[in-house]
Image 1 (cartoon, rainbow, N blue to C red):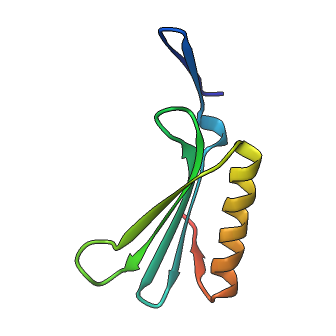
Image 2 (image 1 turned 135 degrees about the vertical axis):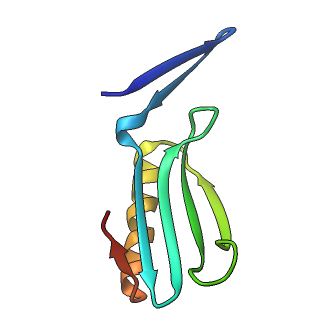
Length: 93
């Protein structure tokens, strides 16, 4: 299990890498990626990235900061379900 604790003055930030998730989706030339991870301050967040697979540059990204891991996990799976309902196919590495 990968787990790192960083102590800055009196603030302890804990990173739990084993709980991080990532998925990639495709529909025709459209791409969509999701990641669930902790930011620099240890807060859980879901990052959505989307755009064209044929144009230069990837597109846009949005970070959704969540109250805790459970809220982030719920958001992550809701967004995966939304991609599936919109006809995107999950890319398996």
